[in-house]
Length: 120
Image (tube, rainbow, N blue to C red; front, top):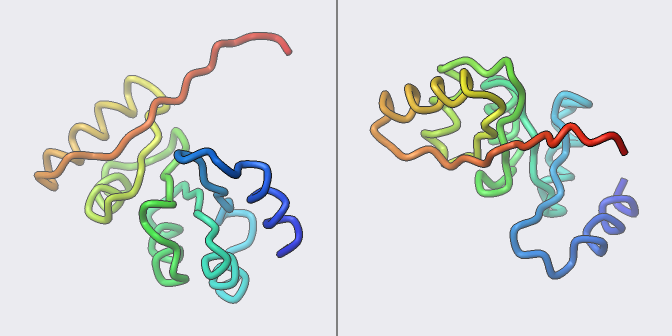
């Protein structure tokens, strides 16, 4: 795990905006998550439960992203409260992000996922 992480780290060296994000849904074992967080990994999340676990494990909020098209307003609110990046997956999703940010009286950190639908 460490060797793979270091290989990815080397591959993105020099890219200021990039971080390695571990999909918490893949394995939410607290020992694994803590170890990854200590190595400097980020966390990719799909729910507020995963977000809470990632925070407990020690992942830094600036290296976390809430992904997926099943995000609830409550999931997004928790991300906004903690300054976690929220991926905009659709217009419907954007409406929920705006709603959550208004409820929290904070700006949401967002990024826009673009699918150009190009056949590789």
